[in-house]
Length: 150
Image (cartoon, rainbow, N blue to C red; front, side):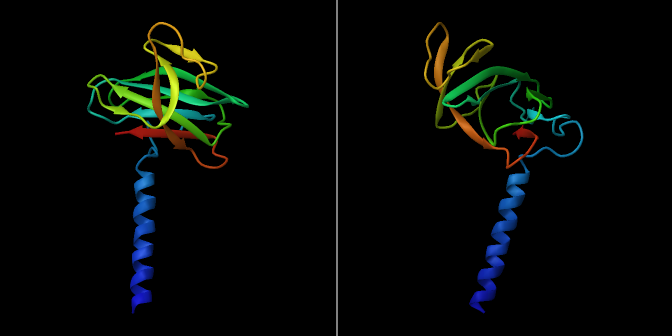
């Protein structure tokens, strides 16, 4: 009896975990994954305009950051075009209303549009700052990925 209950509870936990992860992947339709590959984001908030920055390994021991992708409520767009070459990306998102998605991986960003080639090593200049990014696991050998931010 205990084994049956344990197996059922374990199966339920796995199903709930999978369903929870799927909530972040866009359904078919306007927010579907980018055609031809890429990394995109959707603003599924009711918090106003969403601003997204990303970080990823551009070369060995060199991290690149770029931002800001601007998305109105309900809007989706691609920030990296073409087939994804990394499994892990890092993102930072902020809304007009002050809501944010931050993490523990520190990279350099600017208050205005930017691309930084060594964003994990240098952060100098006017209106730049270190900010924690969240890790995004797009999956193994996935050519495109769209993340809903809610």
